[in-house]
Amino acid sequence: MPTPLIRGNTVRDGPDFGILIERDATPTIEANHIRGNALDGVSIGTRATPTIEANEIHGNSRDGVSIWSQGTAPLIRGDTVRDGKRNGILISKRATPTIEANEIYGNAGFGIWVQDPRSAPVIRRNTFRDGETDSIIVKDGATPTVEATSTSRGMDRNAPQSTL
Image (cartoon, rainbow, N blue to C red; front, side, top):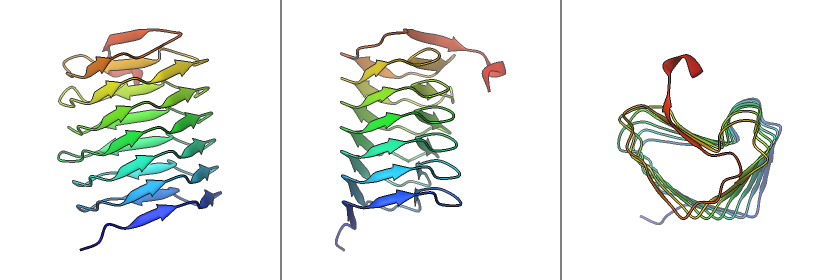
């Protein structure tokens, strides 16, 4: 079966998610402008393994990218995730994404929030700047791998439940 490709589109001002990917889907989402949606810019769950690459994701009403559900393992690479009303990237419910070479800044919440203590993302070569809070926040017990990442605010490895 061919891999779906979504490239070069503008996805904006939608009443829900900009793009929702779930149920074992494996699309490539590339070089799109995803902005101003009522929920997350991109929401990924239920064992989906997409490639999200070279997108401009900004100004969404919740998270720029949310990754949720065990078995969900997207590659998020070379994107700009900025100016969201919550977090740049939210990782929860045992998700195991690879997040690399992104520029993440200006979000009202955290740059990346590893919310579930059972999640184990790989976070490498990302650049964070101008965040209101910590660049990366990790729920106590989560086991991310963080490599060669540049932050202006720092990383908190013991996020209490009350930060929800």
